[in-house]
Image (tube, rainbow, N blue to C red; front, side, top):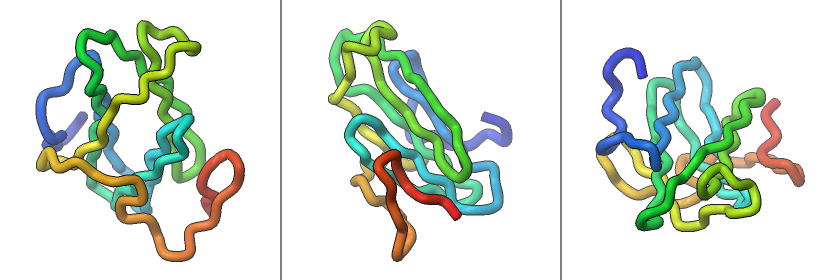
Length: 114
């Protein structure tokens, strides 16, 4: 988190900040729910668990223009955490499709980034 970006609240073990340090839009893609949240350059979002008393681990995959995140309880890939929220720097809860580019194309694996 260089540059002191505001991440919308406290960051702890059950939350993960993601900052777009690039010069193009970046997709945050939450699996297995196929939910997408788009960041403009310089923006940051935070994925947070809302499950009480659960130790959430984040499995992250980076591809061209996209960061894919899976949330697991205790790091067990058979225990997927479904109770989560994505917030912006002000702490506002975001809906899937946040800032999605018009005409965005999709494949079975997520957004198609040209």
